[in-house]
Amino acid sequence: MPAPRTTLRRGLAAAAALPLLAVALTACGYGSEAKDDDAKKSNVAADAKKLSADTVRIGYFPNLTHATALVGDQEGLFQKELGGTQLKTSQFNAGPSEIEALNADSIDIGFIGPSPSINGYTKSKGKNLRIIGGSASGGVKLVVDPKKVKTLDDLKGKKIATPQLGNTQDVAFLNWISERGWKVDAQSGQGDVSVVRTDNKVTPDAYKSGSIEGAWVPEPTASKLVAEGARELLDESTLWPGDKFVITNIIVSQKFLKEHPDVVEAVLRGSVKTNAWINADPDKAKASANAALKKLTGKALPAEIIDPAWKSIQITDDPLAATLDAQAQHAVKAGLLEKPDLNGIYDLKPLNKILKAAGRPEVADAGLGVK
Image: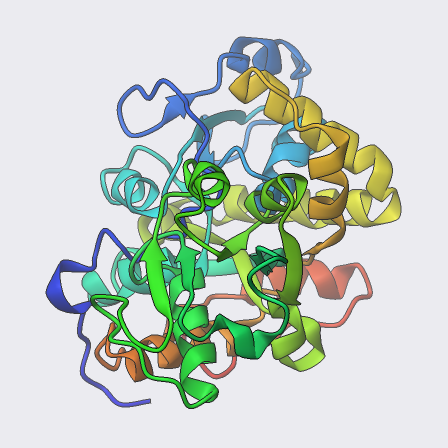
């Protein structure tokens, strides 16, 4: 890829987040710290071996697409691998605040989407983070008012919501529109389709009021809209090779990776084992994730929302690097991102070491790994 490193145009740094379902939390500092850390600490055996760090601080969203973090934390699978090193967790509602926390040394490792990963890496000229593993694929749908939109062609002239200007779903929808030969000004959202940037918290109300005719959104917002009478018209995964694209990956502070590789490896082992646990018993894992959501947000998701949402998300160790690169190119094509240099954004050596030891195939970095 070309060498120049650049950033998002017209102040899109904050907009390049992956604002999935933003859950109302009382934030303290950069994120809201989990209140059960003392309980976790008491569950660590007194003679458990401590790794090179006393503590590892992990950030994630209280969101189904962050199921690896939700379940791994809830079931103690991360702590088991960390031994005497204490796990502390913080929750975030959007990518920019999590990247800010990583840069400020408030967290060491984060579960986060592709857009903030790309933006954080390019803004720091490749110095602040590495992507070290995958977590989830899919979970994004186009849902519409069935009375007003019968086919994909009917979208022309309609008002369709995306979560945020320049975010992962916004870029995907703009790219889809372009591939159909329709024209939309990326900045204003005006054109053959009206792209209405709407926070996922208020999208269901916007749909109920009739101010939008549909939305290209992640889960569980898509299933919330369906529960309000919308119909799924397109699953974004069908647009990608093998029906897979990255929605959540794992990042680490380069400083922490250099100073505490054993801790990073332990977290990755916990992630791999959590993903195996989730995929071995999806129903049990869904209940665990919902229990974690209830603990973190005060409210579990009802069956009519969590059941379809859970089915559309694939849990994976593979960061699906080629799809992150494609997402970056889609943003360039839409005029929202100048061509970035993503060389070195991945360091998959620790993950591949773990996978190899487990007799499993290694994952690829699409030529974007550290040399």
